[in-house]
Image 1: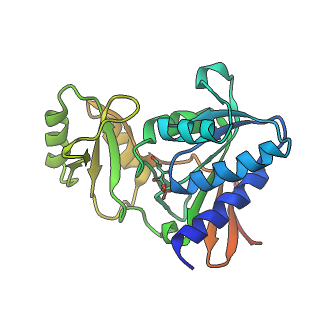
Image 2: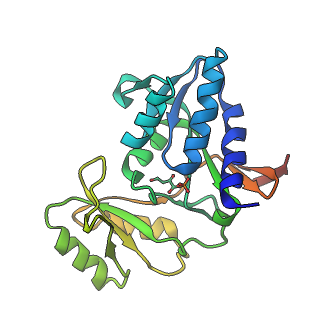
Length: 234
Ligand code: A5P
């Protein structure tokens, strides 16, 4: 089973979490694209939702499939956000931002009552850090911010596209870090956010409630409980 099929399985299963009348946060990425396509089918079969998007790409896809997208400031809070992730560890910490949308994704997640991540099996890891950790920075003084990250031995690389620095929907640059295994994501997130010029990091700690993972031919729903985590195979 390839990772694309696992992504599709997880994405389509996650649509079952959506109830009539909900305000839904739409994440970003290839896994989310499968979810949006399934959601569009349900809307055609009379499911009513209000959608908020985390990126220009997601907005374009949703609109092309007939889903009306509202501005985040038009809604008071979001009932449920379904998003992808690049890595998820055993403590429900994650790395996001491979698609460059981490800032808006974090804002949307922070105003969501429930956050569901959809992933393929390769993204379930013991410790975060194999996938490069994106950090969104302001353009002003970007080389100095880069130097500071280098001084801290985080192996920074500017993200580029067509030989130019990648610019996010929020009009910022992205730097991908390779810090090695991230034993304490909460601490690293705090330290990075304290550096002047850093807008946000791709470390999402204490955000996700449910991980829906495509594993081979099946889907595993992993729920974060207050006291302990619970694994259930369906
Ligand atoms: C977008 O910025 C990311 O957070 C994505 O959700 C993440 O990179 C997962 O992407 P795929 O679903 O394309 O693997």
